[in-house]
Figure 1: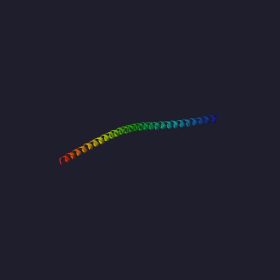
Figure 2: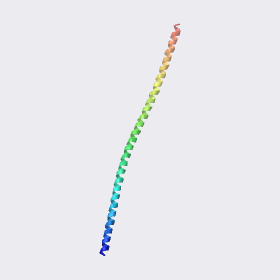
Figure 3: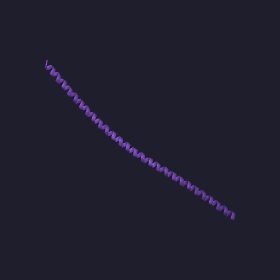
Figure 4: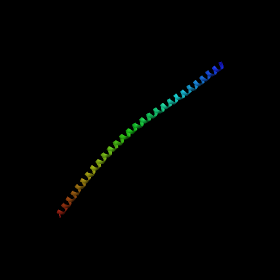
Length: 101
């Protein structure tokens, strides 16, 4: 009877040790998973911040392009007006030349 009781206590201790080891492994796995999850969350926050910066830069570039387009249109109009004035001057000079003959 004592032998059976000793064997049972030994088996219970062995089972308890196995459960403790398994619980430690699960705990270590949970800790590792938690750390990786935190790292991924941090990386995701950095990516989101970069995307916001990129969106802002694209928005600024779009506005700059629109401003450049407006300035180019204005410069084109000024050049056309200047061409018309030069044409008028040339015509006037031709008229002066013809009338002086």
